[in-house]
Length: 250
Image 1 (cartoon, rainbow, N blue to C red):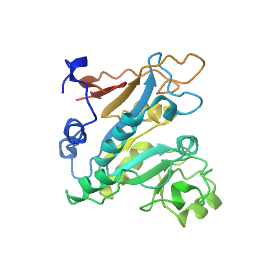
Image 2 (cartoon, rainbow, N blue to C red):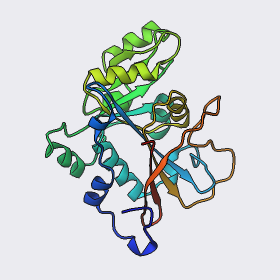
Image 3 (spheres, one colour):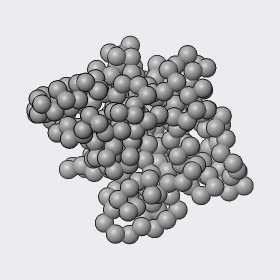
Image 4 (cartoon, rainbow, N blue to C red):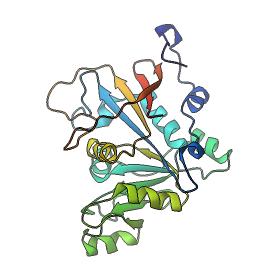
């Protein structure tokens, strides 16, 4: 479906159509260890990234189903530690139908989760680790507290990228070396801002929620400096309530 889609094209969520619409070809992104980074976010009509403190408050069942489809095309799902705490991450990444879709294509049924954290404030008992279907990854810097790193070593693969701050480009290079070449980032705004600053965003998928929020909710991207990046609209797919947008830098 293309940007010319009209209201007449709306219908029940069609997983096969959405899998086709969001297909990823990582081979096109570069060399043997190159990675492809897609970001998935939701925002209100007036640009709010959260409602009542959570991005999940802006979504609906179709948005959640699309999230599973997008995760199905990823090797690793990347999130910030604040998002893990706020949104209740833990357990399987994709629904059973999408796990079967992955398995039919020779992939592990579930993608891995990775969390970016400078301070390693998450506890090993958090559902993100305790309920994980496959061993998560933790991305941090050499400046992270050694005792916190040691505590998480038992429940996750810890990647040290950067000296004083997390070096996302270095983390992505390590993902590539581990065969985790298709990355889906789910924010929050600080992580998207950091990825954009480092010019690491290949695609941005935005669910536009038909609500006006007001207040002081953040935008979907937060960073200290403005660094404009031109993106190309790939498609605009209307759901029952939401509008699903896909943009590419290529």
